[in-house]
Length: 321
Image 1 (cartoon, rainbow, N blue to C red):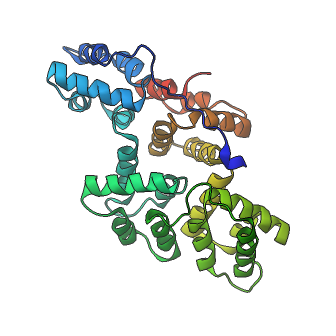
Image 2 (image 1 turned 45 degrees about the vertical axis):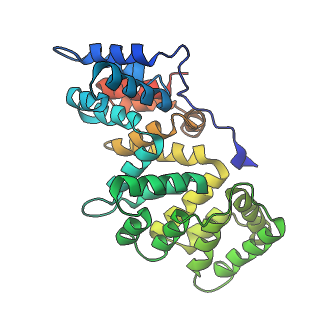
């Protein structure tokens, strides 16, 4: 099944890793007048998250200083956003991004979708626990206060862990679910949104892959075509994101990256979030997909949209290969 693509990261644990040496090198890079930004990039963009946590501990233990505080005082702008993002544990980074998408006036629904749609139940549980720990309120409650209607119900279902565990597959049920989707959409006047979000939020990704195949056999149309003709707005965006993540998550992220850099201006927040959060998961797959889809490399696209230390940090995470 396509959902079982083999994820290839671009950032892997450094060999011959020495947390103490890294901590001292970082201190040297930030000590005195001026900052050696390249040294910071060379170290932090070439270590796994677990190794960065060890470096931060060594920094505290041996130098009596807080690495995050030092980085904050020495760096600035989008470069700082990348480096501080790398220093957070993966689930804490995503929690911070979710909070940012809901904080203040208005809600960034597209970021909520991008962060929540690809997650498995286990990943969601880690995010939910971490969110409450960081912000003192349940993620589901915060989401409910910032969203509405079917979109809110869909996100809430995913957040409360309604999805069946990975590997849960029932081919007979898939035939039935495909028919339910057809009857709720193309097979009737109007659309029963409940059926769509219940099936797409409950079934495992493995199950959904079979459901989508059955849907095509039954209706002669793809599930994407059905969603496009039956739904709109945030609910459509969220459900189509789930469909894309089921079929090929790197395709979904490559599209998001392209959109972030297309046209006038750059959506730096999305660019940073995807590159930082996927670098140790499947950024190599996303790079390959990006090149195939847009006939240019991800690194060349990023180079033309960014500059300075910010550009160098992102390119180091992407890798040139």
